[in-house]
Amino acid sequence: MIEQLRFVRLPATGLDEYGQFLCDTVGLQRADGSDDIARFRSDERAYSVECDATGASDRPVVGLSVRYETDLDDITGKLTERGLNPQRLSPEHCASKLYRDALTFDDHSGNRFEIVVRPEYKSQRYFPARDAGIQAITSIDLRSPDPERDMAIWIEVFGAQARDFAGDCGQLGFDEQHHRLGYYASETSGLLSVNFEVGDLNDIMRSKYLLANRQVRILDGPGRDPASGEIFLYFQGPDGLIVSYTTEMKHVDSDWIPRQFGNGRLSFCMWNSDVLIPERAGVE
Image (tube, rainbow, N blue to C red):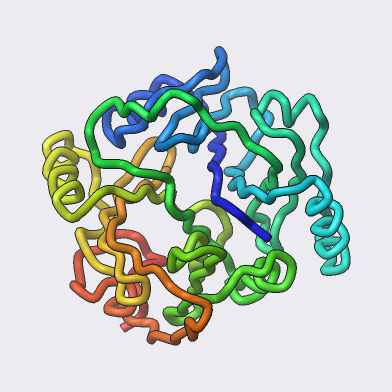
């Protein structure tokens, strides 16, 4: 049912700091916004990241798209049956966010999502602030005290597939990419990282040295995920935001069988790179 990962919305205290980081450091393109909303493109979408300084958002919001407005009716019923509280968003909200219709809900851990219909694309090509090799927003990682319970929502309601597990952490996919959502076992909920696909390992290594020269804190990598096969580099932004570059994620088919990896560090990085993200460190 889910067609695409669309965006992440971040509550922001100051748009200038986010703008400088997301454009000059990460390499996104600034898009249309307002005095208290800043938007950034990573591909042909109207925006992939929205920073909201209005005070309306008290937590990050992950946006995913479905094809039809009738899908929202079906989703509402199924979420309600599972004890969740989906809410249809107003036409004014949807118009301001550049999609036709939407609902919002929180998973069992309190991570917030919007399921949107017909989000806008841009006719102008993506033109980054710097050439980091970014091709698209590719996945979102989330914290959860009970990943399996939260993952069940996506499997049972939205038809997503569990792709692989490392300890209690799980990865979910709904297209040919290995995964689009990752749930990491944690004592708290919330956004763990926003991940962008780049062209190849050369892009990751060029950015690694640029980030180091700018004294941006590297949190994990360069490394390789043994489950998805992707090479990654995680680094820190303002207000605890974590961004990663990834490349070489596996494509999967309908015959994919989920695998269970252990809870050690080598289950998160087969190169055993240094890590400063507790949820990705594993237990030795």
